[in-house]
Image (cartoon, rainbow, N blue to C red; front, side):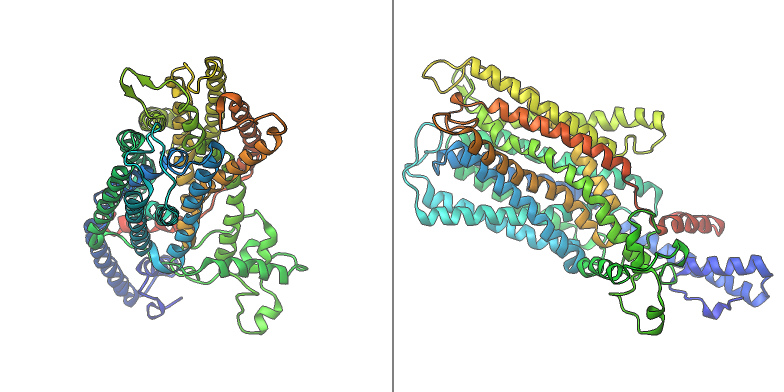
Length: 613
């Protein structure tokens, strides 16, 4: 029987469990029972302190600051992004296809930068410092953008409203403009996945109530994102569309500054998670160790190498149970004679948790790849939808409705569908299938793909109708711009299922050491979706614009067939959905060992009269 002196009191729960098992199994002497009481006292004291800390930090009070930050930062970002395609055509005199590709590349860069921010957050800086530094870069980019638009780009004053053309722009101004918008991309993209993960950190998974709040947080996070973009997609779009571009950029700058201040306001009371170190060597060690043991047969799950005790060998990460998928990687955790005879070498022998971390990355990749085509659907709102609306009837009396403001219907659809989902669909599906979340994340993402496909079909039908209402020698079709409402509404509905599902799925399935990386996968799919969209435009124009044929997406949309491009995306989405179904059926979720430990801990707490934290 182990003596009490051998127990490590830094983990009181494990000590209590060990002593209780010894006590029940052998009939412990009085000395052990006295120490058992000491352990209970230490547990009560530590839990009391932890409870006080948790009550004064984190929770909805400080998560709400992060939601406000998200809304304000999104307002600032979309104040630049939503009308960027018109800025490029009206102010910098780019053609439609070139402007659409420029926006796709810029938006792709925004979300590709999320991988950089996630890496720095998980590995070195931690969530808080990463969010702070990238928000400062975001503010700097908006300040330069406001400055360049005011000093260099608008001659004569008020140009860029669709009627008054701007004079040849200053080369210095153009350089500063591109530098500033890519600083905006780097800053906003770099901190977005980290702010989502940092918000979820404010809820403790060991607490049943906070665990439920953590699941709801991502829904509210995406809700806040759309509340922020509503203002930029209506009021700011209107002012920019009438030539007041500098005013719009300055308002975006002010919103970003307020967002940064609101974030810093909660600094003393946030809950912080320490970075777990660079995950690239850890994952690389698994593949190298497995390759070096290529000819051996993997050991049974019970014989694989794992460090003793409740803590993982990965700093700050929970242990993960062994899974049966991708079994060849188990070779990395199989102990051989060489491992026993020499010093421990992480490039030859890895822990089960380390192997499972690598498996999680591989298992999530097929699901992630299937979301890229959906992002091609999503990115059309910032490019082709705007160009389509710009050649539809949008004047109602003396009032001109900016084409980019139609994205307000997407935002309203997101807000309404979020409420319908949380209040109606979740309770209903919970009763039907017994899942506390209602529909699983994978099912929601599949539904999002289907609705996204329908939005492209709706956009193609609208384009066919628009072309039928084009008058000879007229640029603007007589078809009302409100015919675009169905395609925007369908995209918004698909976002509720796809992007909220992605945030929950990738954050929940990612191991502790790569949580921000999990959140960044959602944004990285948007990034690659923009690049794929740009590639498709180039390919389609290269194939269709031959001889006298202007192609599907020419500068004069009335001579093209953009409807065929929409139907092409719809067909690709349908094909992608079939592949996604197979990937989703194959996928098996991660199983954290600590989850079962927490159940035991809470049972121990109830036994000794300690309230749940």
